[in-house]
Length: 211
Length: 154
Image (cartoon, rainbow over all chains, first blue to last red; front, side):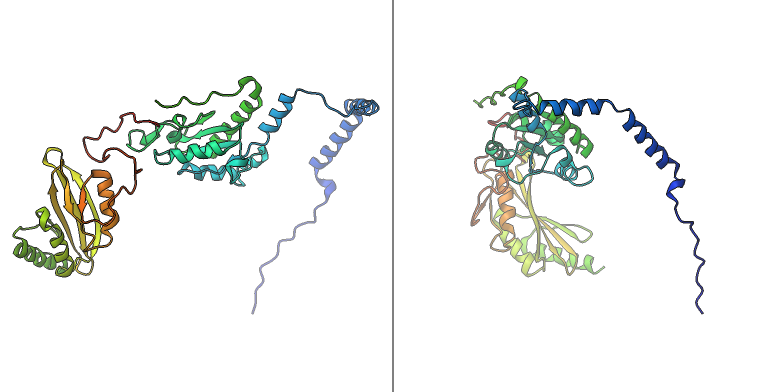
């Protein structure tokens, strides 16, 4: 004999009973009634379109180029060590830097940014330099984690480059061992600010050739 | 107890054949032989003592007392482990290869050469394995200056 548990009876939802919804609708109704600014703006836009070439926006080329650069930074997928796991987490859906226009790209020739995520060994440094050289100008480098910043815990090892800035010029240093995705994302946002100022910074000098 | 009795039996066999008594700790034997008898001991351990698993080969830098090359062979059936050791000088570290006995010794001897500079006579392909071909010095030696700036990267 089968015993069925009693099913709790839920009263059907009535939309009109939700207070929040009513207030929300009321707020927007009032806002639309009082919104004189958008009406004025659309009137101006209407008027501008009657001029010849009125739809052209005038600005400085540097400003618009930098806006484009800073809002579509493509980092080359270049993972060296455990920091790369955090970098992948930053790229993935939970943190999702793609909403800032950053698409991890599997080719240095289409990339603007190299995130050096991990320990740079003396054996790996020429390959890193080569990937950097393959990227088209203008290009930026984020040094991620203690190892890439200074050698980190392996600084006194015989095989470790004591900071990736001895190989390529670095724009943003992200500390941490490893940095959390939040830290890296903060660094990337600071880089965006830096990229937006590109005309003030100018071209950076190449690193001095070793004697 | 079988491992302990097997270890005692192996120790007496080594004593009989090589004239040196291994130090025994539990079922682990440790024996130092002259460099000339190095491959002979390995072959003896593999064929007679049943230590057919070549675990690792490395070296220790004892500064003034030279380098010590050591290899560990395991008898996985009896649970007996044999650590074989030999001394070479730091100025001319030469040691016969074990690649004729264990093929797995190939890369380990290359690594030992890479890190300590021990030259294994008779090795088929003795060159650096982990570091670059242009590397100078042997970094795991005690007298290697680790923090010396070296062009171009450090």
